[in-house]
Structures are given as structure tokens and as C-alpha cells.
Length: 553
Image (tube, rainbow, N blue to C red; front, top):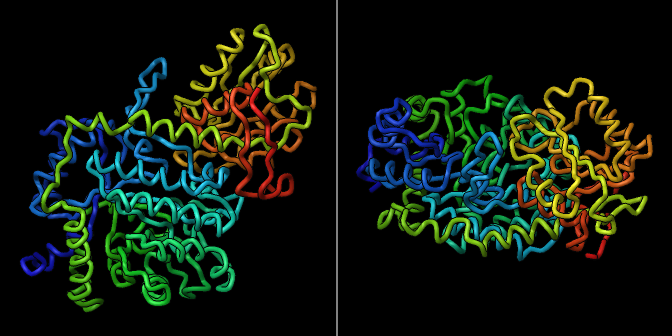
């Protein structure tokens, strides 16, 4: 097939635009543009984002039908297929419409340290993803989160220990690839030691080469040893690897020299999103695409203009910046993967059987096990946990701190608590506009037997910073000082304890999805045992491996 393609058609195989999995009429402008990119421009793949399972599968089938060469479809399934393929929430009651299986973030797996569960997540994600029509998963995240202020990796990492990250990532890769999904280790050569969001600015990791070898590169070497099919690049600079200061995505010493040469990686090199202005804005899309291909990238994903990206890759050959054989190498690799995955024989997914696979109860049970076993009690100085010793008449106040757009924050948690405490009161603090926290909340806490403060701030989807605003911090600290003995539950940033060090009880749930909210409520009630241990340190308050074991009542 490669011999039948023109230079431009081969370049188009290397460009994967993104699309939403929403309902789109065929006469909509956005749909006509997508069909044009697939049928006329001949893009080689797609990056599907959020939508219901049925709509994603139906949409992908239609686009596969329009493509002369089968498409490779990718998605970010770091938390399972349910990270993208969910029905969302129905307003005004925030009813969860369900969807594919969603797991807690990767750091929850680090808190359990069970590689079999990581394998199971990879297996389940592959089975459900392929049923949706997705063949490439941009997971696992192999970054070592050794910087507590990291605003973009955080709980997406398995932890701060490179050996732990390597072991869990290797298991996920094996599970996913054994069941027909291309796994993608990211973000090479390591995004864990940054304090800047690469979506917004250029991060610089100033670690020495020796430190990179002993920390950041350890999980990637393990992934390559496990046969990972793809690796995604880091839109950030590492002077120890390339003194020019360009992002790793555009760096020949990093991608061709280190990854291809020293580490002998023979799989697919995929760029991070090319519309992330942080590390690439200085170059512009066309120049960034040329530099990425020259550096060794096989696929550029999510360009703001896919046609311009294809034109730029072709222009790079015409300008002598790389040869046509360089394009042939990437296009041949992509065509071979499509054949390996069987897309030349069956490119469509079966809509009528999808509901017997996606979100299956056995898969959901594994996600529930991960959520429950990951709950970590870091502090319980007043022995407040579990709450099962309280009577049904106890006055329990649950305060949720979240972004207003996080419709599900606190909903599943409160629903799981209410059968035990019918008098449960719930309150909400808008993390985007906390202002002066209402005085009535302090009065309610004073009259409550127990006050639980659940923070959802710091979840990746809404990150600009992982920190809770000062008025909210002051409120939590004042709760502790007034003797109300608050129980703080971190559903978002697990390092929240650094901001509220005086709280007597601190629990980490690792994620804010319903499965983690329910697990946190069961742990607090004492209906399940607590056994999670920290895969990170929270300096200076908690060491790596800390965690209080609490048996079920």
C-alpha cells in the first residue's frame, strides 16, 4: 500500500486531528469538516474525546466508512474507557448517566501496590476501548511525580518512586496490549518534576543526566523492556539532554539520540497535543510539525489545523529538512500497525453487542475494588474513624469544595453516607469564587457532631493550580482550631495536607469520580477496611509508605 501513496498521502497518515464524541448531524459544519479531513485529506488517524459510548462508536463507524485507508483511533483512557466514554450528568439533579468503566487515577494503584490490578485495568480498558472503536490508548502515564507542586501530572502518576511507577506501568502495558490495544507510555523523557502546566507555558526540568537516568527514565526503560508499542513526548525542555532549550517533542538528541539510539525503542513516537501553546507557541504550528518530524516523531496529534500540519510535513521534505524516506518510515510503521490490529479486515465496531461489553458489571467490580483498597488514612490523631460507632441520630455535616462545573462532586459521597446518617446536611463551596466562606457554615459545623470537608480541587480536568484558595484554607484551619475536629478528605490534590497541616484527620481518596466517592464514604463509615499506603511523600508531614490501617467494623 505504501508504494501506491503520494508524498502528501503518506504525510497525512502521520496527522491525527481530534473530535468530540457528541451527537453531530450530517449537515453540521463540524461534521462536514471531519469527513473532508478523512475522505479528502486522508488523515491516518483520529483522537476521540468525550461522548456517550453509543455516540462515540456510531461516529467512528461513519468516519471509518469515509476513509480509503482504515483509521487508527486514539483516546486518553488513563482512567479507563470511562474517562472519555461517559454519558455525563443530567441537569438539574446531577444524575450520572453512566457509561464505560472508569477507574480511580493511577496514583490510587500506587497506593495499593498490586501489579495485577494494574494489569486488569489495562485488560478492561483494551476490551472496552476496542468495543468502542478505539485502538490506541494514550496511557499509562510513566511520569514520576517527584514534585508536590506539579499542576498537571499529580495523581495521573503512579507515585514518586521510579521502581513503583515502572512496575505498575509495565503491568498496565502488558494487560492492554495482550487484549489488542496499543499502549502509550508518556510523557517522555519525564514530566513529573515540573511546576508549570505544559498546556500553558514551557516547563523546564533542570535535573542532571545522572538524576534523569536514576529517576525519570527508569519507567520508560521498563516499558520498552515490556514491549510498549508507543511513547508520547513531553512538551518541555531538559537542558541535560538538549542544551538548545527546545521542547523534547522537537529535539533530535532526545527522540532520535536517546529514545531511538540509547534506549533502542522501535515503536511509535507520538507527539503530545500540537495545539498546546505552552511549549510550541514560539514556533507556530507549521514549524513545530517540521521540527517534530525531523526530531523523530511519527504522529502529530491534535493540530489546530490538520491540513496545515500535512502541508508542513510535505514542505519539510521539499525544503530538504528531512528525506521522503523519513516519511516512508513513519507511514510504513502506521500501515503495519493497522494490519497487525486487523483493521484491513474489520474496521467497524458492532453497535448491537457493545452494551454487553462496555461498562460490564464484572469490570465495574474491579474498579470498585481499586477504589476501596486505595483509600489511605494519613492522619487520625483523635481516633475519629470510623464513624460507624455513631448513632443514626448523629448530626453530620458534609462540605464539598469543588469547581462549580464539577457537577458530580460530593453527590455520590453524600448518597453513600445518608443511609447511615439520615440527618446529614450538605453544603458547597465554589473553589473558583470562594469569597468569604459564609459564617453560617462555621455555625453549622459548631452544631454538628462531625464535619467532613471533601476537596475536589486539583483534579486534572480543571487544573490551573493544585492549591486551594486562601479563604478556604483559613476556613478549614479555623474549623480545626475551634475544636470541631474536621475530617478532611482529598478527592483532588493529595498534597492538600501541606496547606491545612493542623487538621486532626486526613484521608486521601485519590479521585473524585463516583467510584472513589463511594469508596471513601464506606471507609469513613467503617463498612470496608482501610489499607492504602502513600505512593508519595507529603513533606514534612507524611513519609512515603505512610498509612493507618483500620479494620472494618
